[in-house]
Amino acid sequence: MLIAYKERCQLAEFNTSYPLRPEHWSSYRSNELLTFGTELSLYLHIPFCPQLCSFCEYTRMATPRENLQAHYVQTILRELRTFGELNPQFQLAGFDIGGGTPTALSTHLLELLLLEYRQFLSSRKLASDFEPSIESTFQTATADKLRVIGAAGIERLSLGVQSATGSLLRAHARLNESEERMLEVITTAHDSGIQKVNLDFMYGLPGQTPASIHSDLALIQRLSPEQITLYELRTNMVQLPSASADMRFAAYNIWYQGLLELGYCAPFGRNTFSRNPADAGCSSYLRKRMFYATPYRGFGISAQSMGLNGISYNKGKGLGAGNLRQCVEEPDYSPQDVYLLSSAELAAKYIAVAGYSGQFSLRVASRLLGCDAADYYAEPILFCQEWELLQLVDDDILRITPKGFRHIGAVFSLFYSPPSVTNI
Ligand code: SF4
Image (cartoon, rainbow, N blue to C red; front, side, top):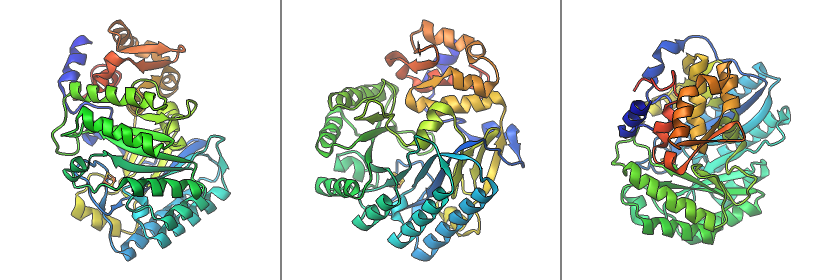
């Protein structure tokens, strides 16, 4: 176990993604469909952005002309309607609209999308903690679009800042926005009925320093959003030099202490923070994924879905910019790569996703495994407790310690399938 842990610590690409490469699941490929349970979240992927940041690992392309945007929106809405007709019974746990930049759509198309969203919701039973969310940028969040979002009942708006240091952003082909504009967007969002604004920041970017992180924290203090999400730069899908594990650990520590001092809450190791201690700092879609492994269905190119029996990716996964446009022009974006997984692989995927919150639940892992996770993972649990990498909380949650967080990907990978002998 110690050797497995040390090996993973050496691998720069090891992080909480799972699997690191789709071919690791090739033996699970299937032509069958996923099955979903009685509770489900939905996700709409809008792959358009006015700018393509070099650090971004999401499936996205430059915003096309409105006729292609319209084709895309009509296609995902048709697929959403069909899915709803075929699955009339489930309770809706969450609904996220992400990308890309959903507000890169024209105001008319965003309105059309959200009108259909409201109609879809009107015939659904919603979970008591249902909290829909949409992603945006300061450049694209016009007052008209914010009003449309608020009127649709979207409760959470997530805006990318990434860094307050303009030179850092420009080095990654991203424009920075003035503080006045940021304040204007946040105020308009609240005035439009959007209850929570989240700001995304990154750490581990080449050129980032303690001083630049303190500038980010000072900006947060002035803008005072309800939530903050920290993203670690991941380089297994983008070609960028990355900060060392020690530098990323030092950066997270500065962020964590700084956010606590500003009144934000989260257990150490989590990347979502909220001013409300009872709030996990994310939408119900992500909360249910991270904490309960609740199934979800993704619509749009490359969107991922997780059912009770596996994972699928829609058309478009892994395509370069030129081929993405062709894919967007297609008449459907149906699931293309379907993997019907073993219970151990489902549990491993859950643990990897839960890794974003710095913890996972033994109860949820037991449900996925079909046996007692404390027994199944006895060896890595013992190792992680002896080495003070994870601590057991409430007889259920295995939470990363500050020592474990230094190599969080290595720690969680000890629980991949089969424990400690993953394909790397
Ligand atoms: S705006 Fe967001 S989604 Fe688009 S390229 Fe930049 S980071 Fe990626």
